[in-house]
Length: 333
Image 1 (cartoon, one colour):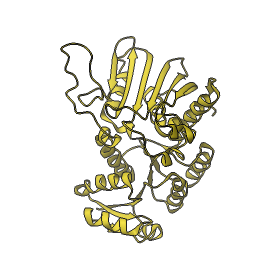
Image 2: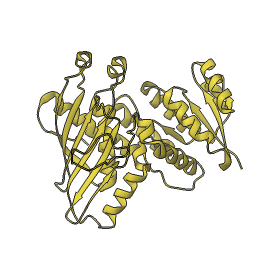
Image 3: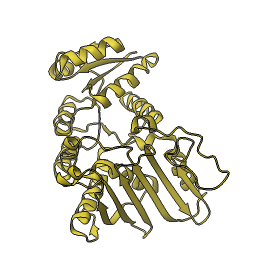
Image 4: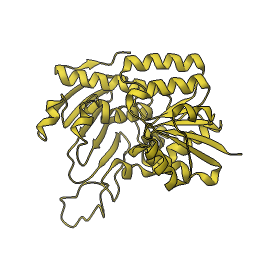
């Protein structure tokens, strides 16, 4: 039996998801594309050999079994709500809505309709992050004393994007906040953040920083450092390190690590480094779409429910407030 997925938005990440879904064709998956740029949607459909809907209305009229929302943030909430009202499971890139307050209203609507919504925090499906989580759950690390999370872009996106991104913590570090809470099964209760802007002055001109670090405190007092930058010239670097009383593991430390050892005779990593987050999380994006397919078919639990994604956004809000005020901020729940 064929499962039909509708995909809304054929920008950079939408096309990536479309290609991933088409790779699932042997699993009985059909794809319908829709975009405000119909010519662009037709171009992508010709490349992938899938159907095109003339607009979003036509896509929903086709009654797909699930929809993938890969459009700009302002359209996330309306499309999630439309899918919920139609009784169609939805996958949506983060965030749920333009603000945490607006996201809470969406959560209420999701609950009211009994809807199924998976949010795109793909690190939960990354093999390295999963292995680190399993090592912690099996007790191999003992008790945690330190967590270190890094998200480092090789180069910044456009200033136009940064002007509407909500800031470095909401755009990038929210993934780290989500990963930490998911992995430890604890909530972050307080954040203290600092940042700098020594790159393009235009980034500061739109109210953002190009580099920042947050000290996050978990419910049991465990501390985590979360750092992010737009200027990691060595490559795209995302790592998560768990240090415990009995052992240490690190996700993302492989031969594509975007750094070099300064020790004589050490030739790790073999390289080359990842250039983009698409490369770094290629496997995770594949498993993410497969997980959504299984969720649509009722074969698994939701790997990233919207409630948990919104809670990570609350932490990012606290980090942004701390950055702006220079004071530790309790996460408001």
